[in-house]
Length: 236
Image (cartoon, rainbow, N blue to C red; front, side, top):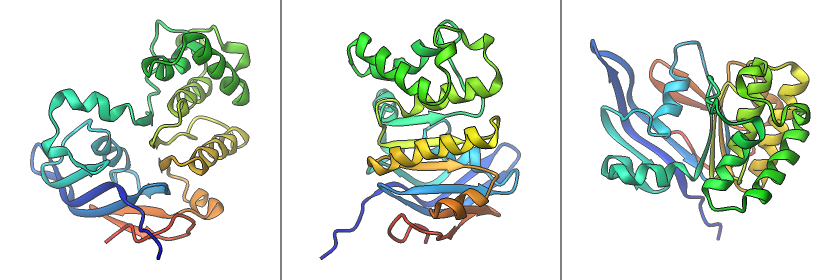
């Protein structure tokens, strides 16, 4: 008998309405299965970034329920949010590198926060940065890096420590095709080690090429296009 995979994220009749009665999501039902890899797509303005923001608790839903790691977020006390976020790696569109830290210090930070020896954390950061072609800017500060370099540094920081859940918002938007594929292969390796990946992108061809489910957002709902390697029934 096959044991079903648990849901790591679950939207249940979830709604989101902004000021002025502007509704983005209405009764959204979506299950993200633990260990899956999903490409989140949709037209500009469909809500890709906002959906990720709901998952990492940047904004709360205005109706329905949203569960993360088996916990109903409406019942989460504020001091528990930081603990839950430590299970996630997040790649923001604006990178959010800390300006007073060097590239290698930014990337090593997630491991140091988890109590890893600083020397070991730095060494792991250096190795991963070299893999993405940033070995020459280890000791540079974010403001001296190009947009593509900042993006690769932010991605490297997000995957450090092998998070349980990786959220990536347009992680290939500022890099060339070769660098984009290297980033996607990095995510693929992380996925193979057990991390659940949700990658928002405007490039729908990635989903077909990498044979992972595509979650297409349209008119406040999610449509699953199962290209498929990740198991299960994700969208109701």
